Image 1 (cartoon, rainbow, N blue to C red):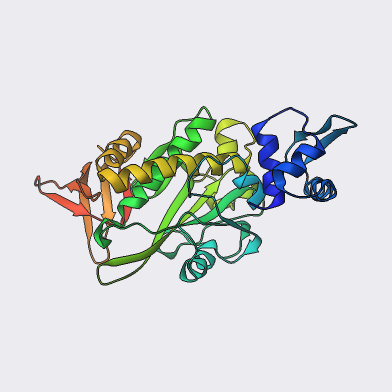
Image 2: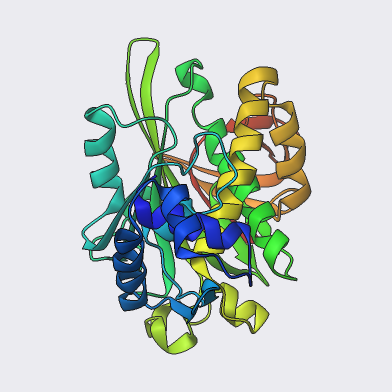
Amino acid sequence: MNIKQEILKAFHDRPGQFISGEELSRTCNCSRTAVWKHIEELRGEGYRFEAVRKSGYRLISSPDSISAEEIVAALQTERIGQRVVAYDTVESTQKLAHEEASRGAPEGTIVIAEEQTAGKGQLGRAWHSPKGTGIWMSLIVRPAIPIPKAPQLTLLTAVAMAKAIESLLDVNVQIKWPNDLLIGGKKMCGILIQLNAEFDRIHYLVIGMGINVNSVKSDFPPELHEIATSLREASGLAIKRAALIKAFCQFFEKEYDHFLAHGFDQVRSEWERYSISLGRYVVVRLHNATLEGRAVALDPEGALLVEDAQGQRHKVYSADLEYRA
């Protein structure tokens, strides 16, 4: 961690308490002048500190920041989210995450931005990513699993994000197979996984996530008003984005480590509990065909099982899904 991260961690570990400049200088292994300089920089970024002679500093409030300092401070994970590369405006965090991964970025690295100008979702669709309202980030992982199991991480990510959201807000999150999170039938999060591999070996995966956090209706283009929502719209509360990112990192690491050690069964069970797709009559638009039937289950590998009118079950690994009455 850098000095600003160490300072913020100290205040997050002792909320509402004064910490002397001398103690902070020992914690950060720097001079008291350096501590003062970094606190002034944090003030310039929107943090409010109270300074009292002989008592030290107390953190009064934090901005809705997605800086590396704010995300890493008090993050209780071993590796997921422990390295953050933060930007203001980018075309796509996915592209930058691929560049980071190809240069050897460690597992758990997050690339995040306040705004994307060319964000993409499933099947290359544009993802609306306005500045300062959401979480637009990509996570790098390097799982030692066979390539056919890589899509299971889409479902794992959805479960971890649903748990993170529900840990902070009184809302009911539902998952639409395979990669959308909904509240009240409206989409507020999308997940996109891209793979870099050769033969039977995965080099890395980039897991892209777009979460509408503090958007209001006017932030969405008119064509999305009936199908998109945000956590603020659903809960009536403004949310600190860094708090949600930290919660996600902690839930993801726990799910991911269990998955690597014990396989897909737990993720499968949890995903089915959140699913809005199972039991529904669906139309599946494949690359060169259309399949209609009832979504009945996930198979042990994570494919959606769709039972047609003749009772035959089909495995669907990736496709557009529409619901029918």
